[in-house]
Amino acid sequence: MTNTLYLPELREMLAEHNTAELQEFCTALHPARTAEFMEGLDPLEAWEVLRHAEPHVRVEIFGYFDQERQVAIFETADRHEVAALIAHMPTDERVDILAHTEEGVVEQLLDLLPADDRRNILRLRSYPDGTAGAVMTTDFARLAEEWTVDEALARLRQLAEELETVYYLYVVDGSDHLRGLVSLRQLVLARPQTKIADIMQREAVSVRVTDDQEEVARQLAKFDFLAIPVIDRENRLVGIVTHDDVIDVVREEATEDAHRIAGVEPLDFGYLETSVASLTWKRGTWLATLFCMALITTYALSQYEEVIAKVTWLFFFVPLINGSGGNTGNQSATLIITALATGDVHLRDWLKVVLRELRVGALLGAGLGLLGFVVANFVAPSAWDAAVVGLALFLVVFLGAIAGTLLPLGFRYLGLDPALMSNPAVACLIDLMGVLVYMTVAIAVLGI
Image (cartoon, rainbow, N blue to C red; front, side):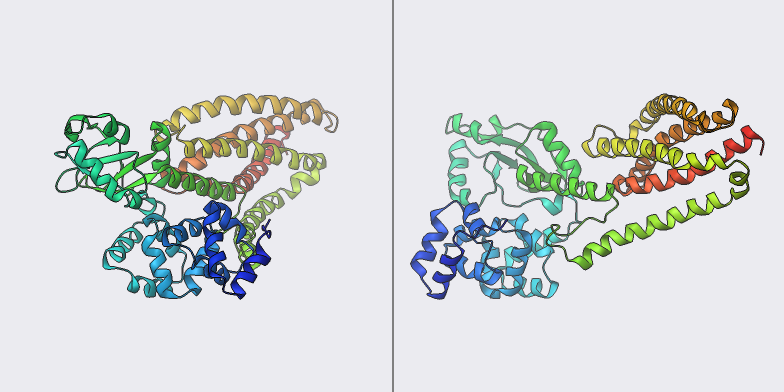
């Protein structure tokens, strides 16, 4: 909900060009609270308020705006002023916002930036989305092995305001090859004339610039780091990924997976910021696909019209069998997709996973098959006829567990997001399989 506590006062200060009070507003509170109190302003009004803040304060407050507002300011505010803001922003944040900004505006802004900033942005924008290179920052400290602790601390004092983090400091050679790391704690505790080479940790855990951002998140979580260095193919240090960037990555990946599992194309912005037309399209494309898959199931069922006409009671159990198989497949798919996302399961574990699901599927199938057999006895002419339902349930649940396991693993093997094999998609595929298995078992057992 929008916080409107200071909204009338802010608009009054803007109307009266009250510079002193606007400057005080920008500095009196934590930047996050300041941004919160500006939510009711339109992007240009918010920018007008920010113009009264010092550059470093302006950047901090701007960082707490939602992405839609940040993009709107980039696209509507004075280009020279926005370029000055970009020049003071953390490298990873400005690249992320520019990625969502109109290309024509981006070109205008890049032309107004200093050459070093422009080259840095273009280099970071060249990395594929979803890789370590796309989420890393280049605002970090490089230390030389031959420096003393005293020289390193003096260098840090000069650069402190420009750095994303100073907790980890990376040691490089003359060609920027990663040689090791040293913590700020080590620097503070070491003697001033001690060489960096004597206190640094030489085996530094790192990720490749082309590594998937999910893998980066797993590495940071595994080693409980605040940041992790990013290297290129020649082992040159090109950036770092910090823990706050990883939090954004985890949130983004979890949201995308949740959308895909539900059969929705991931949203580019928040739910309320996404237009009705976009929501309709992103949901409709999946619904249309699932509709076509359901049509195939309907067609398959129509091919057994004669069987159903002879044994009418069989039709009563179609929803039960398809629902049981679909639910089992959804459970397996969700467990495997989650395990793949968290790193609990890898492709190399596929045989172990399949064997495990074979056992689980058989046990679930036997239990539900027995329940189905008992229930079918109240409808079927004989226990032999009721066995059709029990046997079909066993097979469909068993196969559903296997299908729900193999489909996400297959997508990962092909280099695709396992979450694309969403629960609705699994359910539709298992519905088709359920009809075929059920009718095949009926024909075989009843001799129709």
